[in-house]
Length: 192
Image (cartoon, rainbow, N blue to C red):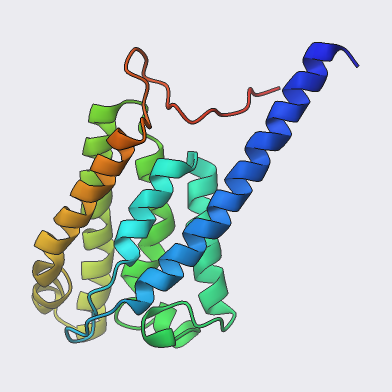
């Protein structure tokens, strides 16, 4: 093997190890954030959304999606990772199921941004997607879409905007995006 190839392989392993560790940490933080919960009817106030968006800050698109998908799988298989230490199909297909099922897509969308301005827009689009899927799901569950949005979206809008604001600040503070390019600062392995 040539020295350059060995160096690239070492860098690839280091990147994969770091991303695997970050994925585990972000899944754990999402689970912990779900337990910081204030019941507000069928949809509790939690910190899950904060960590879902943070997943998009620290991981590339596919790995951000997979990390939040893993979070859902853990809950599906009985690990008490959802709010109130709950798990299983009743939670995934219950009133908050739409919000939960949107998590991997929101993480993917926020990780997709290649510049800081795009990241801000993608965060808002991710929040809109979360509300659309979660609000419609809750509306179907309740048999009334207006009530679904009044109960599942409206009370959380300001708080979730605040969470997104802090995620955007964190992305800026850690230098998620280089100033002179549209590529993320977090290095990604070259495709072979």
